[in-house]
Length: 204
Image (tube, rainbow, N blue to C red; front, side):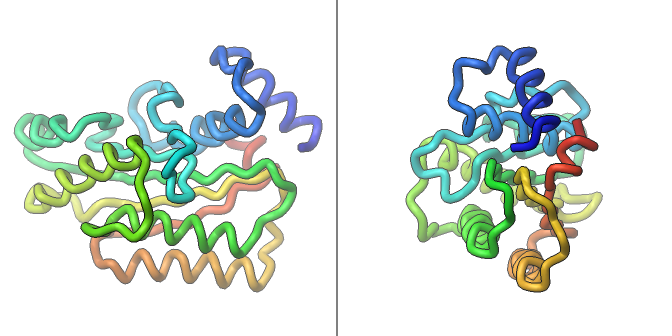
């Protein structure tokens, strides 16, 4: 990890009282803060979106944003639908790696985990965090008639301390991940976004 990113991580974890965590968990919270915050109309507590290690299906953080607010329980979906008359939904998935390079295998694993999240019968075992979020997802799609502004948006962020160079193999895997999710025909847009050291510093 370069000196600037390390400094930003230290500042963030100090401000958020996360210094007691291992560095890899600190980086997951940091990556979640950088990527999820832009989809919210409110301040983010990263503890609400970072996934527990067991049964995470390759996903380090997951935020379900409905009408600008982070949703933490399936019962909130009916409340939003009744109060606002519509559901404007964004799913934000984050994978955070402290490694100094991007890997095609990691992108593939991440993409497969996200696709599995939207299956009624998942292939991967789910920990309690993913299981709870999957119930929220199911509640959202049961209210599809409320998607008056369009189907949900799906964003995948792959955050590392390396440099995204546009490598042919990596770019092909990134496009394939987006195409696989688009083929589900349940999103109005899908983005698979690599965030490298420069991106981390810019977002912070």
